[in-house]
Length: 213
Image (cartoon, rainbow, N blue to C red; front, side):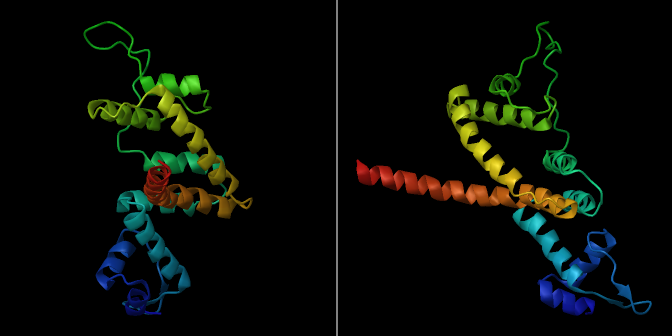
């Protein structure tokens, strides 16, 4: 198919497809002439994937490019892929403060509630993982909004999140290529599903309680 047909099949403007091609988000088609190329179903799938990652997953095109690089690199262990996927999703420049570092002005060691909670929870994670820092930032935001997020309530959330993580890990296929794709796309695209489910579950629980009271 020509570029115009690829545009029609995917609902993406020709100009945008040309941009994807320049930024190597879309792999080259088969060259027919100096100005024409032929595209196939792999290009349709790639364009839809880019749109899903950017529009549903909320990733910038720069991060989409990183995700595609991970997906198309062969011979990777799926645990390494999971780590790469999570690093890709971490905010730019995110880093957990060193818990042994002195806080400027008071000479005392800097501590992170999130880091302490993760350690008390017994989770086997990298203690320098940037998502620990993200948890700390989110926890502080809850404090500022007087949400009242305590270690106990965080434990209750974590009990359920571990179940979700179990589903995630169980869904990873045995074949390396399938594992790469599942880990990356599952990490990015299931998050919006979980957000929608949480909103629906909140309605369900609220209505159920109101009806039983």
